[in-house]
Length: 264
Ligand SMILES: Nc1ncnc2c1ncn2[C@@H]1O[C@H](COP(=O)(O)OP(=O)(O)O)[C@@H](O)[C@H]1O
Ligand SMILES: [Mg+2]
Image 1 (cartoon, protein in one colour):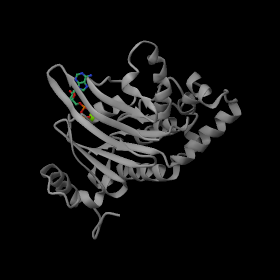
Image 2: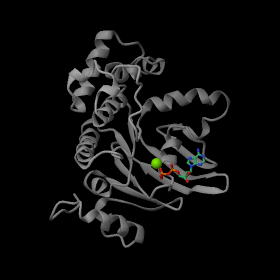
Image 3: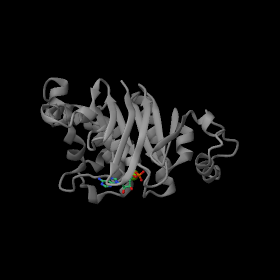
Image 4: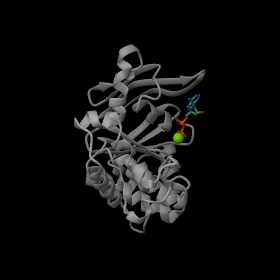
């Protein structure tokens, strides 16, 4: 179970965003993608779930070649790939007209999910799963009856994570999960991501510009710059890198790391 990019190119008009990107996230790996704003991090994630079609190159999710699912009959396979990938967006993206419970339960009621498990779940089973995921993200059951706009932004983020986790995806994709959060909530979401990645043993790709978090929880960190992968390495190697962009990220981060910190 892996996600693999092979020489992926993508341009929008004359703007080259991905310029020969290759990497692999292996089974159970926690891979961080770091890069400055506008460097194609979100574009990379969108290629994994088949929202964007590459101009050139191949993308594999397990044995599915996502990059080949854009034409004719093959399109029917896209929901299967998306079913495997749980995406957590920058903003919670919950449905305001549904309670938090129904938001979390949403993915358990889709035809793709029923197809995956070979049957549909009873209300009782759905309820059990909703409560199980709620516990994973450390939320109190009393928020289930409320609507998203009745809970704080931090709680909405957790609800949206529980919703993503509900159908038990094989991959977790996070796009800047802590953007817009205060430092305390940022650190609690970061520890949650780390805990989930280890506990659920799923392959996780986390797009971030939070290098402190990357250094403490990533198996490997990938740096994306000017459309290219300039480094993909274990945090131990990353802190030794002399690449200017990596140094820049690291200098910014030093003040955020606990005294005496060293990579695991
Ligand atoms: N659908 C699109 N159409 C045109 N340009 C796009 C589209 N999606 C992204 N871009 C451009 O591609 C570049 C990379 O975007 P993005 O991946 O969102 O950056 P980031 O690394 O901040 O996530 C940006 O310049 C953005 O404007
Ligand atoms: Mg982005």
